[in-house]
Length: 467
Image (tube, rainbow, N blue to C red; front, side, top):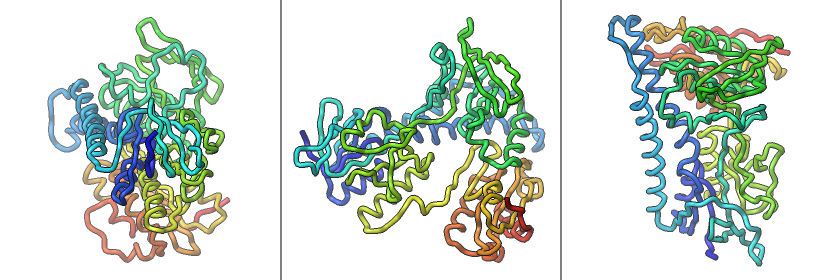
């Protein structure tokens, strides 16, 4: 049995960064990783999916040559090269992270799944089992992430369904990809594979996260997808699945009106959600609590109910993004090492949907603002009235800004359109200052950009009728 100052379980976005800070303070730290280094972002989330989306966008732009005044020959997809590029970035990033951790003095790496094994005899140390090794430490940080949810569907065990990781490593391009879930990962990958040449059908379930967006946002996205030849079934339920003789899949879909439809495809992407990797940690042996979905219960400082144990990243259910996981690390670092009092509850929700056009969102939606009971001001401008979007022939989407009429502070914003994922960042930073929207109105913008129109749009604010 070997004793450490701290043990970190998992190498998502929070774990490795925290490990480097702890060893820099002179601690002897153990890091456990049972799978590939880097977590979901590196291996099957942000980096590989955005790599694939970039290839799909380049193909889409090439096919639109006439819109920009040039002609090309037939645009053909080399799936083997696309896949090689995606997998290469995954493997290089994961391997680079592992090399960096192993080269860090004061840090021991255990390539094994870890689980608690109760407390040491004196009660001040926690026992953590990693394969054949048992380690002890007074501090343990859990950064174990999530995995794909397996929906309760008749016949699902009989068909070769895919999650995003297996989809990205397919040897052949799907002929017809059925996407179940239609949330952010489903929308992004569905559009990318359509542009790569697959037929795509997206089944958006009632619980689909995209349904929390405002109606005008959903309408615009569905319009873009329909134009690209993507079939989207909204508020539908997949009830049964069977394999086909050709090695594909056949699914039964019940629509909102009660009509049942049978859809056949070559591949099925299951994108119905995620479940936390907390079940293999033997949390009960040290008294750590989880909620009904299995997410580890934490307080505002990301501490579990057991002193000396923290939960960071997706496994705590307080965010489902790489950026929230990394900020979890910053919160714990600043509280533990710098005597600060940072809390995850202080952050404003912000995220992006990396479709084309991308959607950037921060704070309240229009729907939430209407229900808030506040006096709200709102302004909306379609992207076809944004000069830079017209110049780049990217006029799908809209910009929506929401302001508290009494405090003059931003309540939220949505930017669906060209550079939407970047523009929303500027609004998010501004919101963090708590300044009046009038400050942004007086700011000198850069021309020609998408963001230059934010002051102009703020001049169009009108009272929003709230419930």
